[in-house]
Length: 367
Image (cartoon, rainbow, N blue to C red; front, side, top):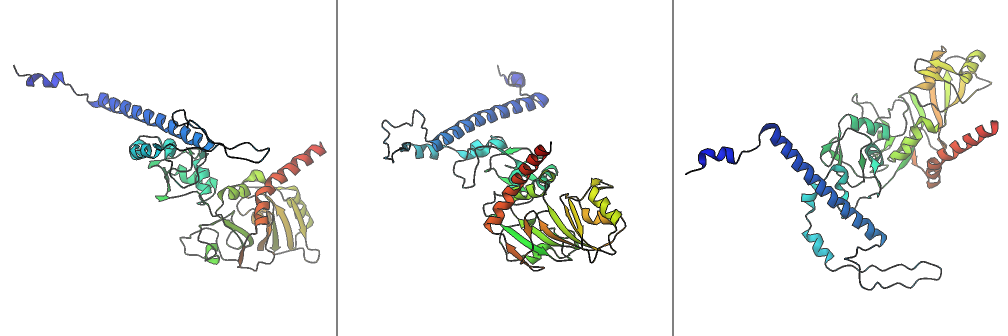
């Protein structure tokens, strides 16, 4: 007797929700197996870096190199002749298709700098020289970043450094060649990379300075002149613009009329603007011409110096930044640039920590 009429009952195929759930379970199992294999490979790779061999690969006798007295002997690792053959049989592509994005770091032959520890995705983008961390976080939230083909919207998503990361469809890499350019910005230039209105940008002034993609640290509005740093060092840019570091900025302000004493005291003690309270760290004016004012401030709020004087009824005719962090425009003519010296770069990177320590110790002494 034929069983064909009963086949649909005997070999009943799952449909609808059951079929979807079965597919999901199968996918989970595949990912779990791939992840376990990935962890095992990572452990072996790390052990190999440390000079630790697994029991099956350990040589019967390990020769010891001669060393100078007082130093720990270094073990000479003898490679297994079958190791290359094992690598050939290992299909990386099939494994990576099933591994979660954060686990795709099992590839051993990528030349990019890879960290043994995870880093947030927005930090990776900043280190790639695309923009600062806060701007990178905005790009991620807007859904413009992909990791190993998957869209990621969480800035804190962890990566190792050798994943396939794309920003706006373009693959990015950790930046190796860091560049630091000091520009004496003239008027009528904006600090963004591109302008839809076709206005001149500061990048037009540094054409040919570097092949690397750089961006300005902090912003000066179109009519503000003076010291501007351009770099692809995202970590340094984040430090120099973050409010917690209180980076010093000094401006020379030319007003439409002399600054009167009550307004001088108001700026020194602090005033309340529409976006909150602000005060100058230091303030002085020219005794011969009180319309020329020097102001030191660490706030990074938009157009903060102009708004402070405009709030008190003054019109700012000219605003020039003469110092940013430890950088000045000395020997740099308006509209020209120069590369930072190694000593200046070191000071920029470590001045924040020393500044915070000094502040803490001073407060302790006052108490």
